[in-house]
Length: 614
Ligand code: F6R
Image (cartoon, rainbow, N blue to C red; front, side, top):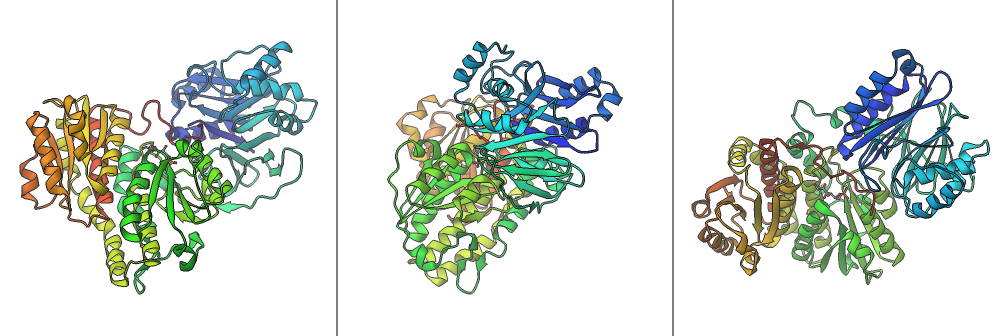
């Protein structure tokens, strides 16, 4: 989704801004722009539809080196279109007061139409269709010599969400930033301050960061930020240290971030598991939950709120919690949940799953649950993210930064953490110590099982290239593997643009089977687990309609191999760890299909990494 970078310091700002935008490219965007001060004290704005590389080219072609060297303050943006096409006019920064104020904005100004009307009636001329430009003019209208005050006043009139950075020709040493619903982080360096919507644009400059919270506004200079409320009361926010290495946000020799992230799953899951299994008591140690076994034992129902891949992980969670902890569990799409006036109470634990910790719908579901008096726990990957903070309790995934837009290691880490949570909740109920110890061993074995799937990558690539030209595909699975089928289909459609759907294996014959023919492959999850025989029957039904079947089979299972046209072999697992191991094979399949089709794998069209709008 949209990205923001701002810089004030002693180094050439434009170079830092462009590098920062490159670091944010993974979030998904369709145009980019930047604004900086020229030697004469004016604000220069350069914008471009398309990639940051094109913006960089335009910057070099339309400015001279001295101009770039002498600019020490600027703001920049990658835009993911919401209001208006992804054109140069609609790209940020947007300006007001004949270019005296420039603004970049993430989020949505919901009452922009009325602000626009009001500003136009005062003679402001708009040059874009965006909601953001209305805010730029509103700030201009309030400006009376104090930029911070003007931004505060304007934001009080705004409905919606924002993360913004604003500069003014009258304050060439200041950036004013503010947030409500869209993340903003301030990196505090030596004689320089970098602001960004995401730490990946900051980490190569400094590890000392301050996360702004909703309602904060900050006056940023090279000495650092001063943070206030919109009513001008001083606010103190702690300085945090970013723990991960910059290399974690680079490709490390892989062709794509997605492939790197698929291959680093053994390590990512080691990190997710490390120190969390109690091999004496046969339970999990999840201290971030901050709940005693007695408190956990009083939970009567679990509700899981999430979107996309995280929702699929939550759907796997339903099987885990019900089987291991005998806890009724309802996975809910977060946006639907928040608007359905959910029935919640103090004995319900709402688990919000979000890689980014910033997904607007999931965050809103967390707030609604807190409002209704439920206990809320966050399962997030990004440390310090809004959902992690607002939930107040939870479990971090520790999977490391996920840059590829298509989520991979976050899914497997989410399912693994859910399994540990189910173990913990189970041990507070009917799960025996022996069964708990057995599960601890199963969980410990996950990374080495994934290694075995990764070792099949060449074989998977060969099968993927055979099917790369199809237009449709079904993924079928049964029981705990059904959500994995959904996830396999999502991965394929996201990055290869092949129409793919996941179904419960038994559901195909109730309608979707009508579509099958020799050009419509079915990817069948045929792991040697209870229910396999039934799925084999469903596969025969597909074959009878001439559909080619790619089976994900347990190694050595000849019965399953025989009914398939092609097979991907994965190690034998228990049903509880099968979703993780199977998902890795499906991720590789989707990746190699997309690569064979020449798709832009790390930044698929129309998609954004962190969906911070409703
Ligand atoms: C799919 C994908 C999305 C996200 C969804 C939720 O590959 O990445 O479906 O899973 O947008 O994002 P988070 O987990 O950050 O809340």
